[in-house]
Length: 382
Image 1 (spheres, helix red, strand yellow):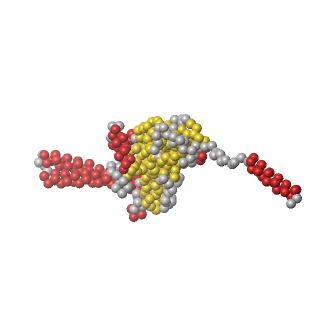
Image 2 (spheres, rainbow, N blue to C red):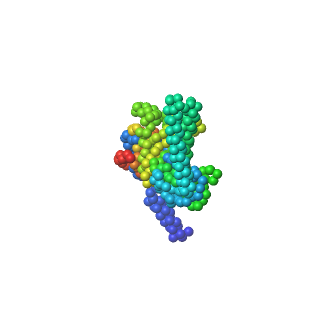
Protein backbone atom coordinates (compact mmCIF):
# COMPACT_ATOMS: atom_id res chain seq x y z
CA UNK A 1 0.00 0.00 0.00
CA UNK A 2 1.37 3.46 -0.85
CA UNK A 3 2.58 5.61 2.00
CA UNK A 4 0.12 8.44 1.15
CA UNK A 5 -2.82 6.05 1.36
CA UNK A 6 -1.79 4.96 4.88
CA UNK A 7 -1.33 8.57 6.14
CA UNK A 8 -4.88 9.84 5.34
CA UNK A 9 -6.84 7.44 7.66
CA UNK A 10 -4.38 8.17 10.42
CA UNK A 11 -4.97 11.88 10.15
CA UNK A 12 -8.76 11.41 10.20
CA UNK A 13 -8.50 9.24 13.31
CA UNK A 14 -6.32 11.79 15.08
CA UNK A 15 -8.71 14.67 14.29
CA UNK A 16 -11.63 12.70 15.64
CA UNK A 17 -9.82 12.01 18.90
CA UNK A 18 -8.88 15.68 19.28
CA UNK A 19 -12.47 16.90 18.70
CA UNK A 20 -13.89 14.40 21.20
CA UNK A 21 -11.49 15.63 23.83
CA UNK A 22 -12.53 19.28 23.37
CA UNK A 23 -16.36 18.86 23.88
CA UNK A 24 -17.95 19.58 27.36
CA UNK A 25 -20.71 17.18 28.58
CA UNK A 26 -24.34 18.69 28.37
CA UNK A 27 -25.96 19.50 31.75
CA UNK A 28 -29.68 20.62 32.42
CA UNK A 29 -29.98 23.86 34.41
CA UNK A 30 -33.49 24.26 36.00
CA UNK A 31 -35.15 27.70 35.62
CA UNK A 32 -35.53 29.76 38.79
CA UNK A 33 -38.85 29.45 40.68
CA UNK A 34 -41.50 31.90 39.43
CA UNK A 35 -41.93 35.04 41.47
CA UNK A 36 -45.28 35.69 43.20
CA UNK A 37 -46.59 38.22 45.69
CA UNK A 38 -47.80 36.87 49.03
CA UNK A 39 -49.39 38.49 52.07
CA UNK A 40 -50.62 37.48 55.47
CA UNK A 41 -54.40 37.79 55.89
CA UNK A 42 -55.70 40.88 57.61
CA UNK A 43 -57.58 40.35 60.83
CA UNK A 44 -60.02 43.03 61.89
CA UNK A 45 -63.49 43.58 63.23
CA UNK A 46 -65.99 43.49 60.37
CA UNK A 47 -69.74 43.75 60.28
CA UNK A 48 -71.32 40.41 59.54
CA UNK A 49 -74.06 40.36 56.93
CA UNK A 50 -76.87 37.99 56.17
CA UNK A 51 -77.28 38.09 52.40
CA UNK A 52 -80.36 36.78 50.62
CA UNK A 53 -82.31 37.23 47.40
CA UNK A 54 -85.64 39.00 47.74
CA UNK A 55 -88.52 40.40 45.72
CA UNK A 56 -90.07 43.83 45.89
CA UNK A 57 -93.79 44.21 46.51
CA UNK A 58 -96.15 47.16 46.65
CA UNK A 59 -97.31 48.26 50.08
CA UNK A 60 -100.77 48.96 48.61
CA UNK A 61 -102.37 47.75 45.37
CA UNK A 62 -106.02 48.55 44.74
CA UNK A 63 -108.34 47.91 41.81
CA UNK A 64 -110.37 51.03 41.00
CA UNK A 65 -113.94 49.97 40.26
CA UNK A 66 -117.23 51.56 39.28
CA UNK A 67 -119.51 51.02 42.26
CA UNK A 68 -122.61 52.38 40.53
CA UNK A 69 -124.04 51.88 37.03
CA UNK A 70 -123.70 54.68 34.49
CA UNK A 71 -121.79 56.06 31.53
CA UNK A 72 -118.18 57.21 31.97
CA UNK A 73 -118.16 60.94 31.24
CA UNK A 74 -114.50 61.80 31.86
CA UNK A 75 -111.06 60.34 32.54
CA UNK A 76 -108.78 62.78 34.35
CA UNK A 77 -105.34 61.14 34.22
CA UNK A 78 -102.74 59.82 31.78
CA UNK A 79 -101.98 56.12 31.76
CA UNK A 80 -99.08 55.36 34.08
CA UNK A 81 -99.24 58.72 35.85
CA UNK A 82 -97.99 59.20 39.40
CA UNK A 83 -100.90 60.78 41.27
CA UNK A 84 -101.51 62.10 44.76
CA UNK A 85 -104.14 60.87 47.19
CA UNK A 86 -107.55 62.37 46.37
CA UNK A 87 -106.77 63.06 42.69
CA UNK A 88 -109.91 62.67 40.56
CA UNK A 89 -109.36 59.86 38.06
CA UNK A 90 -112.75 58.84 36.61
CA UNK A 91 -116.18 60.46 36.49
CA UNK A 92 -119.43 58.56 35.97
CA UNK A 93 -122.44 60.65 34.87
CA UNK A 94 -123.19 62.51 38.10
CA UNK A 95 -126.48 64.25 37.15
CA UNK A 96 -128.91 61.36 37.81
CA UNK A 97 -127.34 60.68 41.19
CA UNK A 98 -127.30 64.35 42.11
CA UNK A 99 -131.03 64.57 41.33
CA UNK A 100 -131.73 61.48 43.47
CA UNK A 101 -129.79 63.05 46.32
CA UNK A 102 -131.82 66.26 46.05
CA UNK A 103 -135.05 64.22 45.96
CA UNK A 104 -134.00 62.38 49.08
CA UNK A 105 -133.21 65.66 50.86
CA UNK A 106 -136.62 67.05 49.88
CA UNK A 107 -138.36 63.92 51.17
CA UNK A 108 -136.41 64.26 54.41
CA UNK A 109 -137.54 67.89 54.80
CA UNK A 110 -141.16 66.81 54.24
CA UNK A 111 -140.88 64.07 56.82
CA UNK A 112 -139.44 66.52 59.34
CA UNK A 113 -142.36 68.90 58.76
CA UNK A 114 -144.88 66.13 59.37
CA UNK A 115 -143.02 65.17 62.54
CA UNK A 116 -143.26 68.75 63.83
CA UNK A 117 -147.04 68.65 63.34
CA UNK A 118 -147.32 65.25 65.02
CA UNK A 119 -145.33 66.45 68.04
CA UNK A 120 -147.58 69.51 68.35
CA UNK A 121 -150.68 67.32 68.22
CA UNK A 122 -149.21 65.02 70.86
CA UNK A 123 -148.55 68.00 73.10
CA UNK A 124 -152.19 69.17 72.76
CA UNK A 125 -153.54 65.72 73.57
CA UNK A 126 -151.27 65.60 76.60
CA UNK A 127 -152.65 68.91 77.92
CA UNK A 128 -156.26 67.89 77.24
CA UNK A 129 -155.78 64.57 78.96
CA UNK A 130 -154.44 66.30 82.06
CA UNK A 131 -157.59 68.47 82.14
CA UNK A 132 -159.68 65.36 81.49
CA UNK A 133 -161.09 66.92 78.32
CA UNK A 134 -159.68 64.23 76.00
CA UNK A 135 -159.63 60.49 76.25
CA UNK A 136 -156.68 58.16 76.77
CA UNK A 137 -157.39 56.62 73.35
CA UNK A 138 -156.94 59.98 71.60
CA UNK A 139 -153.65 60.52 73.44
CA UNK A 140 -152.40 57.03 72.51
CA UNK A 141 -153.31 57.64 68.87
CA UNK A 142 -151.40 60.93 68.82
CA UNK A 143 -148.38 59.29 70.47
CA UNK A 144 -148.36 56.46 67.91
CA UNK A 145 -148.61 58.98 65.07
CA UNK A 146 -145.69 60.98 66.46
CA UNK A 147 -143.52 57.85 66.77
CA UNK A 148 -144.43 56.78 63.24
CA UNK A 149 -143.56 60.19 61.83
CA UNK A 150 -140.29 60.16 63.77
CA UNK A 151 -139.41 56.80 62.20
CA UNK A 152 -140.27 58.23 58.77
CA UNK A 153 -137.79 61.05 59.37
CA UNK A 154 -135.07 58.57 60.30
CA UNK A 155 -135.85 56.54 57.17
CA UNK A 156 -135.73 59.68 55.05
CA UNK A 157 -132.38 60.63 56.59
CA UNK A 158 -131.02 57.16 55.74
CA UNK A 159 -132.27 57.50 52.16
CA UNK A 160 -130.57 60.89 51.92
CA UNK A 161 -127.29 59.43 53.15
CA UNK A 162 -127.50 56.55 50.65
CA UNK A 163 -128.21 58.98 47.83
CA UNK A 164 -125.28 61.14 48.96
CA UNK A 165 -122.96 58.12 49.00
CA UNK A 166 -124.09 57.01 45.54
CA UNK A 167 -123.52 60.55 44.28
CA UNK A 168 -119.97 60.44 45.69
CA UNK A 169 -119.37 57.22 43.77
CA UNK A 170 -119.70 59.15 40.52
CA UNK A 171 -116.17 60.42 41.17
CA UNK A 172 -113.44 57.79 41.46
CA UNK A 173 -110.41 59.30 43.19
CA UNK A 174 -106.97 57.94 44.15
CA UNK A 175 -107.14 56.38 47.64
CA UNK A 176 -103.39 56.99 48.17
CA UNK A 177 -100.30 58.29 46.36
CA UNK A 178 -99.34 55.89 43.61
CA UNK A 179 -99.00 55.01 39.94
CA UNK A 180 -102.21 54.35 38.00
CA UNK A 181 -102.13 51.65 35.35
CA UNK A 182 -103.53 51.99 31.84
CA UNK A 183 -107.31 52.53 31.83
CA UNK A 184 -109.48 49.52 31.05
CA UNK A 185 -112.52 51.48 29.85
CA UNK A 186 -113.21 54.43 27.55
CA UNK A 187 -115.22 57.63 27.83
CA UNK A 188 -118.85 56.92 27.00
CA UNK A 189 -118.67 53.28 28.05
CA UNK A 190 -121.42 51.95 30.30
CA UNK A 191 -120.07 50.49 33.52
CA UNK A 192 -121.56 48.79 36.56
CA UNK A 193 -124.20 46.88 34.60
CA UNK A 194 -126.52 44.82 36.81
CA UNK A 195 -124.94 46.56 39.81
CA UNK A 196 -121.75 44.52 39.23
CA UNK A 197 -118.53 46.47 39.91
CA UNK A 198 -116.54 47.19 36.76
CA UNK A 199 -112.75 47.40 37.00
CA UNK A 200 -111.53 50.73 35.64
CA UNK A 201 -107.78 50.57 36.41
CA UNK A 202 -105.35 49.68 39.19
CA UNK A 203 -103.35 52.00 41.41
CA UNK A 204 -100.06 50.84 42.92
CA UNK A 205 -98.24 52.53 45.79
CA UNK A 206 -94.46 52.44 45.23
CA UNK A 207 -93.28 54.73 48.03
CA UNK A 208 -92.56 53.18 50.44
CA UNK A 209 -92.01 49.70 49.06
CA UNK A 210 -91.71 46.26 50.64
CA UNK A 211 -88.92 43.72 50.14
CA UNK A 212 -89.80 40.11 50.95
CA UNK A 213 -87.19 37.41 51.54
CA UNK A 214 -86.70 34.16 53.46
CA UNK A 215 -84.16 33.12 56.09
CA UNK A 216 -83.21 29.48 56.63
CA UNK A 217 -83.65 27.80 59.99
CA UNK A 218 -79.96 27.82 60.94
CA UNK A 219 -79.65 31.55 60.32
CA UNK A 220 -82.87 32.18 62.23
CA UNK A 221 -81.48 30.41 65.29
CA UNK A 222 -78.15 32.24 65.04
CA UNK A 223 -79.79 35.65 64.65
CA UNK A 224 -82.18 35.04 67.53
CA UNK A 225 -79.24 34.08 69.74
CA UNK A 226 -77.30 37.20 68.73
CA UNK A 227 -80.30 39.46 69.35
CA UNK A 228 -80.93 37.84 72.72
CA UNK A 229 -77.34 38.65 73.76
CA UNK A 230 -78.01 42.26 72.81
CA UNK A 231 -81.21 42.34 74.88
CA UNK A 232 -83.50 42.69 71.86
CA UNK A 233 -87.00 41.22 71.65
CA UNK A 234 -89.38 40.51 68.80
CA UNK A 235 -90.87 43.96 69.33
CA UNK A 236 -87.54 45.49 68.31
CA UNK A 237 -87.67 44.07 64.77
CA UNK A 238 -88.24 47.54 63.27
CA UNK A 239 -84.87 48.68 64.63
CA UNK A 240 -82.98 46.17 62.48
CA UNK A 241 -81.70 47.82 59.29
CA UNK A 242 -82.03 46.22 55.87
CA UNK A 243 -80.11 47.12 52.71
CA UNK A 244 -81.13 46.41 49.13
CA UNK A 245 -79.31 46.46 45.80
CA UNK A 246 -80.53 45.84 42.28
CA UNK A 247 -78.76 43.27 40.12
CA UNK A 248 -77.03 46.13 38.30
CA UNK A 249 -75.91 47.94 41.46
CA UNK A 250 -72.36 47.61 42.73
CA UNK A 251 -73.43 47.73 46.37
CA UNK A 252 -76.57 48.13 48.44
CA UNK A 253 -77.64 51.77 47.96
CA UNK A 254 -81.22 51.46 49.22
CA UNK A 255 -81.66 51.57 52.99
CA UNK A 256 -84.63 50.66 55.14
CA UNK A 257 -85.57 48.53 58.11
CA UNK A 258 -87.38 45.31 58.87
CA UNK A 259 -91.05 45.66 59.70
CA UNK A 260 -92.29 42.06 59.88
CA UNK A 261 -91.12 38.54 60.61
CA UNK A 262 -93.49 35.57 60.40
CA UNK A 263 -94.30 33.92 63.74
CA UNK A 264 -93.63 30.43 62.35
CA UNK A 265 -91.33 28.78 59.81
CA UNK A 266 -92.75 27.40 56.58
CA UNK A 267 -92.73 23.65 57.09
CA UNK A 268 -92.14 22.78 53.43
CA UNK A 269 -89.03 24.94 53.02
CA UNK A 270 -87.78 25.32 56.58
CA UNK A 271 -87.52 29.08 56.13
CA UNK A 272 -88.87 32.14 57.90
CA UNK A 273 -90.66 34.80 55.86
CA UNK A 274 -89.27 38.26 56.58
CA UNK A 275 -90.22 41.66 55.20
CA UNK A 276 -88.45 45.00 55.08
CA UNK A 277 -89.70 48.44 54.09
CA UNK A 278 -87.76 51.11 52.20
CA UNK A 279 -88.35 54.68 51.13
CA UNK A 280 -88.64 54.93 47.34
CA UNK A 281 -89.31 58.60 46.52
CA UNK A 282 -88.00 58.44 42.94
CA UNK A 283 -89.68 55.10 42.10
CA UNK A 284 -86.27 53.57 41.32
CA UNK A 285 -87.56 50.32 42.80
CA UNK A 286 -90.59 48.66 41.23
CA UNK A 287 -92.76 45.84 42.55
CA UNK A 288 -91.69 42.51 41.12
CA UNK A 289 -87.96 43.27 40.95
CA UNK A 290 -85.59 40.56 42.17
CA UNK A 291 -83.05 42.23 44.43
CA UNK A 292 -80.06 41.45 46.61
CA UNK A 293 -80.80 41.89 50.31
CA UNK A 294 -78.45 42.07 53.24
CA UNK A 295 -79.10 42.51 56.93
CA UNK A 296 -76.13 43.71 58.99
CA UNK A 297 -75.31 41.92 62.21
CA UNK A 298 -72.90 42.55 65.09
CA UNK A 299 -69.19 43.04 64.33
CA UNK A 300 -66.80 40.07 64.62
CA UNK A 301 -63.08 39.45 64.21
CA UNK A 302 -62.51 37.97 60.74
CA UNK A 303 -59.72 37.31 58.24
CA UNK A 304 -59.69 39.34 55.04
CA UNK A 305 -57.79 38.76 51.79
CA UNK A 306 -58.05 40.43 48.37
CA UNK A 307 -61.05 39.10 46.52
CA UNK A 308 -58.93 38.55 43.40
CA UNK A 309 -56.86 35.99 45.33
CA UNK A 310 -59.80 33.62 45.68
CA UNK A 311 -60.45 30.86 43.17
CA UNK A 312 -63.18 28.30 42.76
CA UNK A 313 -63.64 24.86 41.29
CA UNK A 314 -66.07 21.97 41.58
CA UNK A 315 -64.98 21.47 45.18
CA UNK A 316 -65.81 25.03 46.15
CA UNK A 317 -63.74 28.12 46.83
CA UNK A 318 -60.05 28.07 47.65
CA UNK A 319 -56.90 30.16 48.21
CA UNK A 320 -53.32 29.41 47.20
CA UNK A 321 -50.98 29.45 50.21
CA UNK A 322 -47.30 28.64 50.67
CA UNK A 323 -45.91 26.05 53.07
CA UNK A 324 -42.59 26.38 54.94
CA UNK A 325 -40.67 25.30 51.81
CA UNK A 326 -42.41 27.91 49.59
CA UNK A 327 -44.35 25.19 47.84
CA UNK A 328 -47.86 26.21 46.68
CA UNK A 329 -50.81 24.49 48.33
CA UNK A 330 -54.51 24.80 47.48
CA UNK A 331 -56.51 25.55 50.64
CA UNK A 332 -60.29 25.11 50.78
CA UNK A 333 -61.97 28.01 52.54
CA UNK A 334 -65.41 29.29 53.52
CA UNK A 335 -65.94 32.76 52.05
CA UNK A 336 -68.09 35.53 53.44
CA UNK A 337 -69.15 38.89 52.05
CA UNK A 338 -66.98 41.50 50.33
CA UNK A 339 -65.69 44.56 52.19
CA UNK A 340 -64.41 47.03 49.61
CA UNK A 341 -62.03 44.94 47.50
CA UNK A 342 -61.42 42.41 50.27
CA UNK A 343 -63.19 39.12 50.88
CA UNK A 344 -64.11 37.97 54.37
CA UNK A 345 -62.84 34.43 55.07
CA UNK A 346 -64.98 32.64 57.62
CA UNK A 347 -62.97 29.42 57.86
CA UNK A 348 -59.81 27.83 56.43
CA UNK A 349 -57.09 30.39 57.22
CA UNK A 350 -54.56 30.88 60.02
CA UNK A 351 -52.92 34.18 61.04
CA UNK A 352 -49.46 33.15 59.80
CA UNK A 353 -50.60 31.80 56.42
CA UNK A 354 -48.94 33.32 53.37
CA UNK A 355 -51.59 33.82 50.72
CA UNK A 356 -50.71 34.31 47.05
CA UNK A 357 -52.27 37.65 46.12
CA UNK A 358 -50.54 38.32 42.77
CA UNK A 359 -49.05 36.07 40.10
CA UNK A 360 -51.75 33.46 40.54
CA UNK A 361 -51.17 32.01 37.08
CA UNK A 362 -47.54 31.31 38.02
CA UNK A 363 -48.49 29.67 41.32
CA UNK A 364 -49.11 26.01 40.52
CA UNK A 365 -50.06 23.71 43.43
CA UNK A 366 -47.21 21.37 44.28
CA UNK A 367 -44.50 23.59 42.79
CA UNK A 368 -42.03 25.91 44.48
CA UNK A 369 -42.17 29.66 44.00
CA UNK A 370 -40.10 32.72 44.89
CA UNK A 371 -42.33 34.74 47.28
CA UNK A 372 -42.20 38.52 47.67
CA UNK A 373 -44.05 39.87 50.71
CA UNK A 374 -46.75 42.50 50.32
CA UNK A 375 -48.58 44.31 53.12
CA UNK A 376 -52.36 44.53 52.76
CA UNK A 377 -54.23 47.77 53.38
CA UNK A 378 -57.33 47.55 55.61
CA UNK A 379 -60.50 48.27 53.65
CA UNK A 380 -63.15 50.85 54.48
CA UNK A 381 -66.39 49.27 55.63
CA UNK A 382 -69.57 50.45 53.98
